[in-house]
Length: 250
Ligand code: ADP
Picture 1 (cartoon, protein in one colour):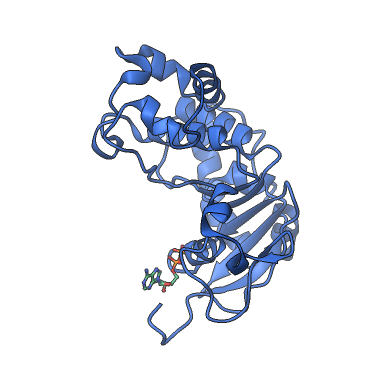
Picture 2 (cartoon, helix red, strand yellow):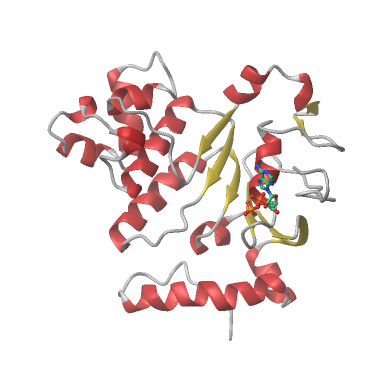
């Protein structure tokens, strides 16, 4: 960014269609930058990114962005109705398509409960909605867009068990049959990933599946112990299912 120090370096990986690539690591490690390069918020100073063998710089930006759906932690919502916010994903979507996408994103219940349903105003930056609701709207929008590639920036904030379960269901739905790059914070996502890339100081220092990385006993294993075991004990304390639990043995 500033020309002094590269934000990411020596970054090489391949994602096959339908795979989920999880990017994990501390703040400032380069995860968002790697993602920004993919949808061409920036271009790399050296190296290249190819989609289906084509350098992304050879694609029209509109075509590239049509093929990539983005669900960010802070969903970009406008001070318009929920309907208009969803139509961003597919401007000519029918009411039936809107309802179906909202249902699959676990958003239909709260939309129907709102006095004006799909005509309810989302408020400035979606302020009239809770964080969990904003995320699910953002997922509904991505479902309407239906792109082959998905970029997901997971929420870091703690969610209550019910919201978490709904979000999990919505995420499963939107990630299905899509090549997904996810800046992952949640154990369930990380466990399910085809491959985890562990970022530190702009480099990928480890990569593999959850079980491989835990078995390696490196940085990720430490992180898993420190971070995810805490999540897990909190979850068991709530009496929730432990089926997503890590296989880490302390
Ligand atoms: P992460 O997503 O893992 O938190 P980032 O990709 O945001 O990491 O950051 C990688 C590095 O690039 C950090 O040193 C960060 O300060 C720097 N950086 C990120 N975005 C910008 C920007 N827009 N301008 C300048 N530096 C940036």
